[in-house]
Length: 189
Image 1 (tube, rainbow, N blue to C red):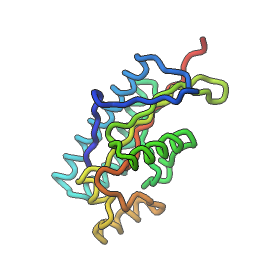
Image 2 (cartoon, one colour):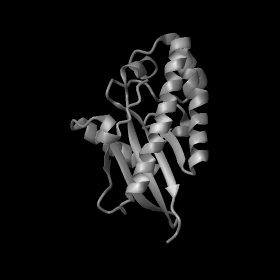
Image 3 (cartoon, rainbow, N blue to C red):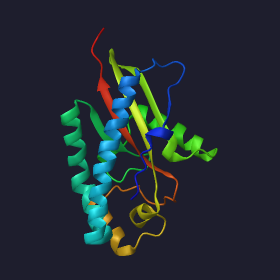
């Protein structure tokens, strides 16, 4: 699985009606995405070398949530992954994430690259100001082994055993596989 994190090309978009987040919040969000993506990519690469696709499946199933929890705990932010077609039902998007990812899909259909798409804004959630950051995760060639259109039958069986409600199949290279999603409740002013 290739996880593309390119801060230099990161197009952070906030709708006109949203409160603009500070540059410091956006920079911290990018830093946390890079940390999560980097640790996840390293774990996946190592697992693929030693255990093939089944090893990668094990990383996504057990290590990815631990990595996200560690980064969340260390930073005080909520750091996770989600998808419009989640493998793990517990990772299904909330309404905000769904809206942003659907806008990304429309932009990709018009020719933008998934790797370049991110959204940052401050929103009101239950009377609190919350910074939300969503960064698209593009589907790389190696991702197709477990998430593509032609997943090996024995691998499909293992996926179904771990994820009975799996929807994360049928992707093509360059599709948005999912998104990193970050939240931070802001102090009242």
